[in-house]
Length: 132
Image (cartoon, rainbow, N blue to C red; front, side):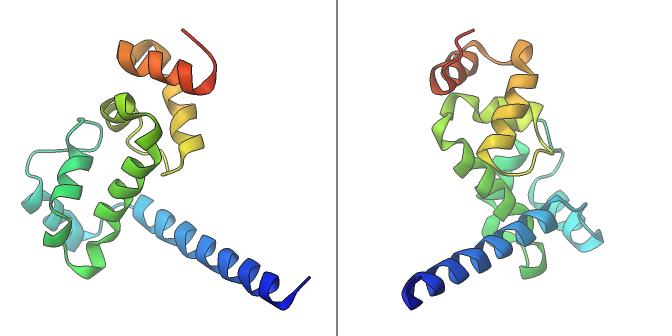
């Protein structure tokens, strides 16, 4: 392999490890400081209510550096669901603890097939080749 290709592979691997580490950290329950910031910025909202993730995104700049992992995870979930825009609210409501990944979210949505909005069910079927 060429030196450039080896460097590319090493860089890609390192970036992948950083993403996995940030995803793992975002899945951890918030500590007291971050819980207080979440309550302050998104009062009354909880994971799975359909509004929590968007609130975290909307208030990203209001979170301290140690608590940025929570809005960042919400942003990652939205990015993963860009292929399924009709499913964003369903995923927020039905799959709040699913790790940000298109595969994981698709699997979770399939597990909740009967609870999906008709728009999400149709879009998921079109995108994955299984119409319901």
